[in-house]
Image (tube, rainbow, N blue to C red):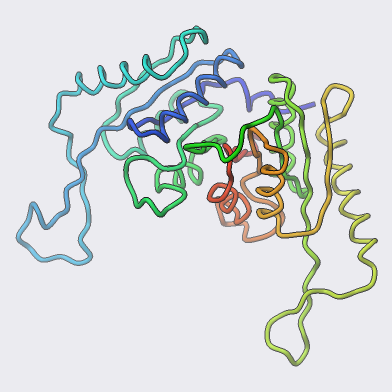
Length: 310
């Protein structure tokens, strides 16, 4: 059992010449080579011009428009070719497709991913634009939200020396199942260990006359723990994930899910943290749930956000 479409399509990676995008390109190249899939490298060329610089009419708020970059497109194509040649290990024996697009990077990456039927989009944690204090750049954030497929956001520098371990978070939801299926397939093809985590919080109830809520303080915490273990085992069975063909470990623990997952990835010195786009909590209309968003911001290793493909 498993969703193989999550692994078969091309891998699209966005680059901009930054250190973060260089790491993204290296990760995407290794992934594509290991899975024998096409690698598509995208460079967006745009020149942002604020409206006040081209019109004397006062407007507020000041919008921003995009005009074609005055540089020769052929020069950018050559630059992209040089970036690819200098970054990708020749031993991988890849023949990547390079694409230079006009306009904003976010739209360019998403459009290319849609056109080629990508199975995965890879971006760096933060590129050349934005503020240095931001952990997640606007391009990475928006691509993770709106890409037509699963997304991996790599870290500029790993916060630990990675071991061949993949950590995946589940919660019994369809998105959690998709993340588990993808992570298990990735662990099988790379030979990595798989550590499955179900993090749960004690339920909260109204505090009566008190404003807000207080943590639930019942005396049957053992029942909640038992239910969490059951949820985890049911997800493994439902997704066809067994220890017979995987180096599999599991963990059900209380705590805020994104904190538990990022801490577990650190403790395991994981090479990759995998989450679904949205779990059981939050609002259905949100494209990206709070747990996925927080993991993208605070993960110390590459983070994969997996979308169900059915």
